[in-house]
Amino acid sequence: MEPFQLAAQACRKAAPPCGKLALRADPGDNDRPPATAWGRAQGMTMNEPKETFSTPLATKLGFGLWAISIVWWFVYYAQYGGAFGLMELKLACISWPTKECYFFQQQIRSPIPRYVPAFWYAGMLAFAVGLYQTWQQRRK
Image (cartoon, rainbow, N blue to C red; front, top):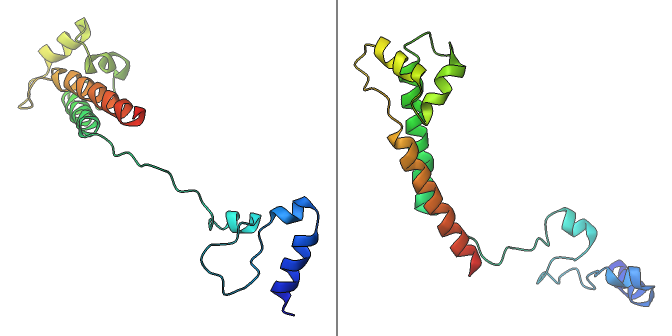
């Protein structure tokens, strides 16, 4: 008798913990991977997700608009006091204009258009729509 057959026979006669380990009786049985702890550790018996959901275009668009807004804000306000100078005052200018933002804008003379948070708010709106679409996908 071959070793695999002996192990399978011994496992069938053993107590339930060993009986739960599904050893293959025949090494040529390649229809399914072994359901042993070692097999799971190797990733051979991973449970595949039932459904995969794609990221809605609105979410990607929201992140893209936010990225454009952040780059535009950074490049525009870096002209006053350096890239990271007065960052605590400039940071508020991403989403709403403060008195400091108006002051910085009056002092900056450049060919770069004045920063307005329109892309920031458009990105927020698109991201919110994308979150709603994701919620609807997963609810089904």
